[in-house]
Image 1 (cartoon, chains in turn red, blue):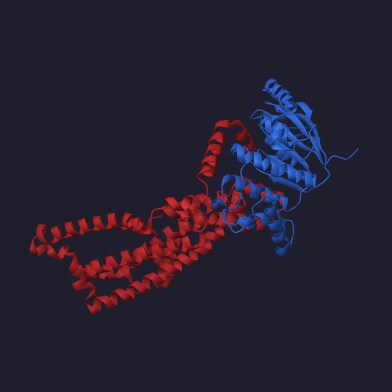
Image 2 (tube, chains in turn red, orange; image 1 turned 180 degrees about the horizontal axis):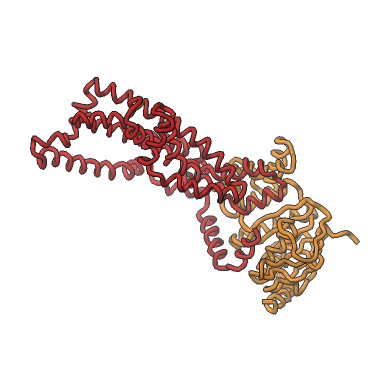
Length: 302
Length: 243
C-alpha cells in the first residue's frame, strides 16, 4: 500500500500519461461513440468472410491431395471431404455411434468443467485473501498444468479405474489452470482506489470480496472459463483415447475406426469433435457476453 | 476556540529511506476549506492518506474528532459494473443505511451534482467530468464532516473544472464541512478555499499559509479581480521558492 504512494509521487511522467488517457477518454464523450460502430452487416462480412474463404482454399487443397496427388490405392488415407458425409454421417450406424460418443464425451467434459469451476473459484477466493496462500498454491497450479495428459492418464486409470470418474478427473486437472490463473489476476487487479474506498467505508473481508473482488474478477473468470470449456472437450477426448476402454466417447471411437482403417467415419468423428469444441467455446463466450458484456470492455462493451 | 476535526501534530511519514513528509503541523476545522498546493512529489497525497486514516504516520500524531470522512480520489474510481446510482449507493450501504435509505440519499446526492437523469447509466457511458461528479456524489451520501479531495479535477478541461469548482463551493457553503483540497493549480487553490497551504518537496513540509478573505458564494469571475490576482501571485511566489 505504502510503496504505491511513493511510486505515484515519484513518477510524474506515468501520472501525466494517465491524465492524458483520462482526458482523451473524456474528450471522446459518451453519446458520440455508438455512431462510429460499424453496421451489423459490415461486421458480419468482416468477421465471417475471411475465415470462410480460407476454409474454401483448404478444402480445395484437400480435394487436390485426395483426388490428384494420392494414387487410388492410397486414397483411403485421405478420402475427399464429401465422403466424410456420404460414408460417415450418412451411415446410420456411424451416426448413432457418433451421437452416443458425443454424449459420453460431453457428459465427462461438462462434469469436469463444473467441478473445476467450483474447485478453481474456491481456490481463487482463498488465494486472493492472503499472499501466503497464493505463494503456496501458485507453483503447484503451474506444475499441474505442465503434466502431460499422456503421463497422467495411466496413473489416473490405475487409481480410479476406467469409468466416468477418471475421465472427469482428467478434465478437472486439464481445465483447472485457466480457471485459477485468469480469475486470480482479475481479483488481484481490482483497483487500489476501490480497495481504499472499501477501507474508508469500513467494509469487512466478506463485503470486500462480494462487492469488489468477485465482480472485478468476472471478466477474467469468463475468459478462463471459455478456454477451459474448449480444453474440457480436449481433455475428455484425449483421456478417453488413452484409457482405451470403458464407455465409448469420441476419443475411443476415433481409435476404433482407425484400427478398422475406416477413414471416412474416422474423419467424421474428428469433425464432430471439432464442432463440439467450437460449440462449447461459442456457448461459453455467449454466456460471458451475457453476464459481463454490459460493462466489461473485454467482453464487448463499447 | 472550536476544536479542529483533524489535527496533525509533528506528523512524519517515511517510506523505507524516503522521507515523504517532514514533521508537519496542520489543522482543519468545520467551515474551513484548506487547499494544499505544492510541486509533485511533495507528499500532498501522503498527507491526505494520513488525514483519512488510510495510512499511519511514522512519527508525531493525528487527532481525529470525527470518523466521518469523505475522500474524493484523483480518478473517479467507480465500479464499472455498477450503475451511477449503484456507485452512489455504495458508501451509504457500507455505512449501514437500509437499501431504501441509501437509494434515496444517492438520488439526492446525484441531483445535487446535476446527474439525476443519469442514475441508470454505467460509468463508461459518461464523460470524465460526469464520472468525477458521480465520485463526488458517492461521498456526499454519507454527509461527511471531513472532506478530502486529491486533485479531483486535475484531469479535466478548464470549463468542466470551473463548473465543478462552483459545485464544490456550493456544497461547502451549504454543509460547512472541514475540507482539505490537494491541487497543483494555484488559481484553483485560491478560488476554492478559505486557506491555502504551500508545501515544498523532498521531504514534504509546509512552507507558507495564506488566509483567503473572499466571501462565499464566489463567482468564477472572482478569478479576474485584482485582489484575487494579488493573492494568487503571493501563493505562486511561495510555491516557486518552495520548488
